[in-house]
Image (cartoon, rainbow, N blue to C red):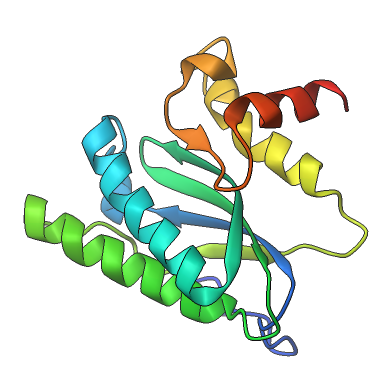
Amino acid sequence: MPRHPEHLQAFDYLGPHRYSLRFCTESRRPVFTDAPAVELVLKHFLQQVDEQGFALLAYCFMPDHVHLLIEGLRADSDCKRFISRAKQFSGFYYSQQHQRRLWQRYGYERVMRDDEATIDAARYILANPLRAELVKDIREYPFTGSSVVTIDELIEDLRTM
């Protein structure tokens, strides 16, 4: 049995699929507690979302990890490539500024089934700061969002469920 998460053997990670991703910081250090670190990493995530043909439906930077909900927009949207490049570029520029490694080597991904509601996955991601008791209202937490809709639209969608 492997000591790290593995990709699905019978799945190519290409095309218009949705993925729930989680990347942890090296040694679970609380890196994402201030805006400059989050902004640096988010900038590179957004660049790779654009280059690899994905939509970033929801994200939440917790102190020692990040949750992403992405969806492929093209037939050549490659989740493995997105993961690799997003972590590589954000990690490189973070280490240039801070002289230390950003990410653990492996992350976690879950391919969402067609019958799973996107809003349920977004709700789970956005509720992380609430579950961790970092805030009492999601609007108080500065490190959540989407490249597709505003945080107010996401929260409104969550209320209608």
